Image 1 (tube, helix red, strand yellow):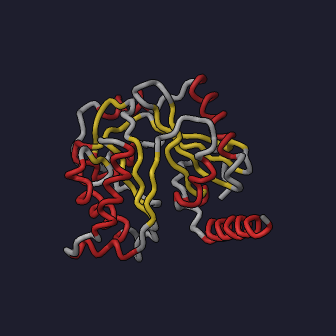
Image 2 (tube, rainbow, N blue to C red):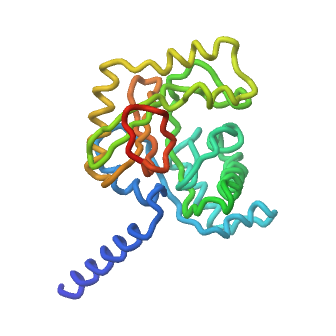
Length: 252
């Protein structure tokens, strides 16, 4: 009995050390904390990988066991699904990357998402997982970026030491304007999507505060509104490394 207790203690200590060493922007870091919060979130399955996954971009086949594991986890979520690494989804190339309609497209989309992560910045993103998430149809009024990605009601809240500091619509006009294909009235449609009413702010402030109880320090937390009327928590990142429009709260 003493041996088992000691073994459990050692395993838990190892897990804590691993989390401590992770980049905090990695979903592998923050998801274990946030998934226990009782607010709407997409169902999620995670497969740990290493950088050798980049070999699939060079024409090498995936190891059979890994391909089977990817397909198994994807099937547990169901199609269509939302695909990402623990760092990024490449959603601006929506139909080739994060949106996976069926199993026959899965491996190709994984390759495209991995390529995006490898090419991001100067040295790429240090991803360590492929993540399969429930696809939640969002409240959207138009599409952008090749006319494919739904622009939806999404919000970003900034929390510091459990306190909500500010909040903003996620899709600002300058970002959407970079799209090559947009409807003529996209600015009007975006303005409508970005209107925040009191009921919404009250609800998301409550959600953000709950997340702030498990995410120590300064964070951004993102929410998206589904067609089912629910607001879902979908992403998190260190506050000082997150896009932030000008506002009265300045603490970077």
